[in-house]
Amino acid sequence: MQQFVLDTSLFVNPDCRKQFGKTPYSSVSGFIKKAKTKKKKAEFYMPPIVFRELSHFTEKGSSRLSTVVKKRAPNLYGIYIPAAILYTFIDDVRMRVNKGLRLAEEFARDNKPDNRAKLNKLRAKYREAMRRGMVDSKEDLEVILLAYELGATIVTSDEGMVEMANKIGVEWIEAERFGALLKSI
Amino acid sequence: MQQFVLDTSLFVNPDCRKQFGKTPYSSVSGFIKKAKTKKKKAEFYMPPIVFRELSHFTEKGSSRLSTVVKKRAPNLYGIYIPAAILYTFIDDVRMRVNKGLRLAEEFARDNKPDNRAKLNKLRAKYREAMRRGMVDSKEDLEVILLAYELGATIVTSDEGMVEMANKIGVEWIEAERFGALLKSI
Image (cartoon, rainbow over all chains, first blue to last red; front, side, top):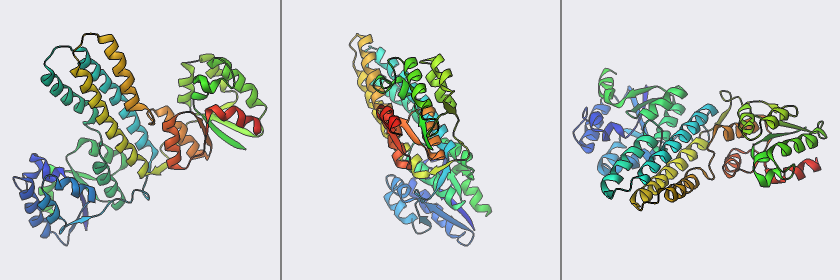
């Protein structure tokens, strides 16, 4: 029995969900149909807070999904991870925090009055500097830890998750390729 | 034999170092003198990168210190920590990153021309929002992990370190009180 832990990107990211449907809800429906045909060969999991995240995109989809995707959180207080994971994470955060300050300074120096354009640019750049390629939410970490605990495969299109999965020896598959993988099981 | 892992704050923070001397160098000297009298009762440790950090304040002091303070890094790849530590850390970082953006926006909106005053205020506020009360450097984390590994006591005045030490069950003593503790050993 193969086990998979799903990230919301599978149903939310347009490039990923198009394998199963056009909208978040229709991609959930499409996935459920295909998943049912693999009942004896594959198990699917999502932590409860990831179900909740998905429900912000499709409440009905998130609730229907629990018929084929198991709702299970990682055992946060029972799982131990190598200290090196936290170590490299703290170092990464520190460099990003410095970058964030340089950005904030750059925009504080700019006294031209078009605040709306300025703020939009600041937000885009700040997001890129602070969050891209980093595990930046409890939801992402729960997916990784649950897969680590179960020895399962992560299904995601998130760079930061893939990077941490590689550090901790967790198998993953690009969400974009999951439809094809599922077919082959 | 009691074991202590020292943070630089003991010699760098004026409120802490005054127990041993007025300047970073003289406080190192004063500490060495007292530490030698406890040779059979206490062992002192500092990770190599913390020695290096101290050398930015007193190169001579940092180098003399290695006669009484053992230079030893934590076994980063051998120590395992509860996943909950990383989990709460990531959640804390996320909230701080959002705060940092709100701050950057506030200063980007201010188009008054006194850039020097603006930047100073921005830096102070950003530092407070992003780093205060959080383990924000490899040096801090190595002190915590070494104490965790050895079952030793951390000597620090850093809030963020104390908070993480409490989460992971590591003993600590305020650097300000360490002179008095040393006397009583």
